[in-house]
Image 1 (cartoon, rainbow, N blue to C red):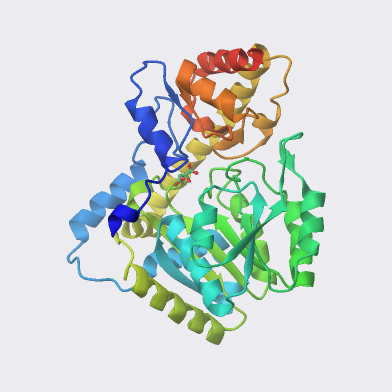
Image 2: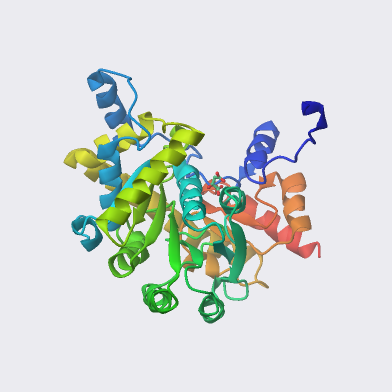
Length: 399
Ligand code: LMR
């Protein structure tokens, strides 16, 4: 039967990783997959994670099953990380959390929950959105539609167009939002815009599904969760998919959580029972190791402080790099305005090149980014910034 299957193209992001590894050019630059890199180009294990992992190895007495909802201590710690310690939804007993295999697993569980509750639901995603949102959400059978978001002429959010599109949605439509560090554009909503959206979500009775994959890497751990905290305090229902891949550097450990805020504690219990059943029917239980590490970090004051400092270090490097990238590009390509790179947040920005120019950067200059010219800022360093900026200038001049 398998001989009937067609060979599919490689994944748009993960395929680039393999192509980059296979490139033997000493000048090659990886701006593809969204992993943090330090100023030596490494993606290190965070020190807080290393210490928590060491403690785990010494203290762990069993590898027995944890259950489909995962590690209860981790789930509780993650709720407080997303919502803050004293959030009213927590006090009201309206929040339930299931540990998930990464942020992707959380997104898929959320989509499965929405489909179970309301099979006709449409999920509205930003234009553009992270490329893997589409298969993750539509794979559950939900229909996807788009709302305007990124304005390439300013590098910011087309907020009026976004509002106008969301105003036209019918009640109970699902809207996927990025909490911070929008992937792939780097263009985030301001606090004022979150407040305006809240009024609209209330009035139109929309269901927010918020993806938080970069908490701490944008403006701060609490600041990056501003929209989540606001929406969860004021709306009857919210779903939040959280990832520990970037802010804990746990990529391959597949560590994430889905938080669902329901109108009442009884509805919240029903939601969790559904999620547990879904997890059991797909992968039974999430992997424990990363979640146990995150719990150890967040539960220990010393490790938590060390982690917060390390996250602040990553954030500072990204913000500093953004200034440097903008300055190098301004010098190498004075005819073009790259000022938006310095005002955006997180790992990604669109460079604004077409697919042909991106291909030229890859084949001639060994600089790798996705075909839509999304670049991972963290892949740049003091010693390759000039090389990068000159390559971009040459590609632009070739037109
Ligand atoms: C990215 O957008 O590059 C990351 O989130 C990694 C991935 O899984 O695509």
